Structures are given as C-alpha cells and as structure tokens.
Amino acid sequence: MSKGRLVVILTGDREVGKTTVCRRLAERLHTEGLRVGGVLTDTTHVGADRTLVVHDLGDDQRSVLASTGPLAKGLKHGAFTFSPEGIYRGIKAIGRGMSADLLIVDEIGPFEMSDGGFFPVLHVIRKAARSLLVIRPSLIERAAAKLGLDDDHEVVMLTAETRDQVLDHLGEIFLAHYVRSTTH
Image (cartoon, rainbow, N blue to C red; front, side):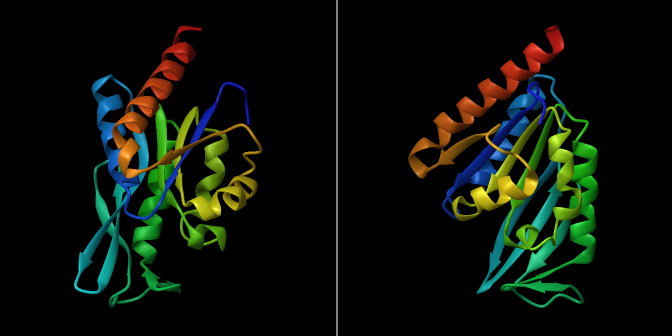
C-alpha cells in the first residue's frame, strides 16, 4: 500500500457501537466537506431473528443484506442467509466509495474471510486514499493478511467506555490526513 494512504481498522466486541461510531464519523466528516462512501451494516432484531441491512453511504439506499429468519432466496453462511441483492448493493457501494474522501466498510466478517459477501471488491481498499474497516477482533490478523495490509494500518479498539474518544480520534486522524493530502 502506498505511504500516502491511511487504513484504520475499527474493532471491538459485538454490539459495542462500531456501526454507530462509523455513522457519526461519516456525518461529522460530511459536515467538514468530505465525501464519505462505502457501507454501514445495521442490525435489527425481531424476536429471535436478526436482520442485517446494508446502507449505501453514497446514495443513502438500504437493502436487506442477511437474515437469520426466512429470506426468499440467498446464500447460507453460519446462522445467516445472505441476499444476493444486498451483497450486490454493498459491492457497488464499496466500489463507488473508493473515490470518496473516506471509504467505510462495515463490516468485513466471517463470510468475507470465506471469499463471500463483499470480498470480491475489497481489493479497492488498497486504492482508496482513506479507509475505515470494521473487523471483529478475532478476524483482524486473517483479514489484514487477506487484504494485503501488512503493518501499514492502525487498529483502534472500541469499548463502551471509549466511544466518544474513539470518535474524536478517528475524526482527527482522517480529517488531518485529508487536509495534508489536499494541501501538498
């Protein structure tokens, strides 16, 4: 990866607020005039069923990505059935997000580690100027190797106690990198 690129991996336990931090960061940077692209993955719960909804940050559209409940058709991985339409929307959003001032990919999970889901387009991370990747702690090493990140990335751990500090830190580093890259 080029020295001029910035890749940050945001990690933390399940339901600690990684998507919320990504959403707030996107809003904050947007108010600073930066274009933010890529995807957020929201989780909804209805009874025992969980549904993942992919949110395209470029056009603000949403589609069902996966569900533990019934889907008309899809690809089974773990407890979830993944919607081909949701995967396609996410892949398109990530591809378009490569040219944004910040590319957010929430999340790179077990399905991508099995070459499914968003994996076919994740090579763009190496081309994006600034990327924020949400990856579970147990998958960081494997994902970094699969994405060819070597040691040229920062890992930021999110906890319930550090949400505000992490949001501020991410805002500062991405904005500072953007300003440096546009003034040189």
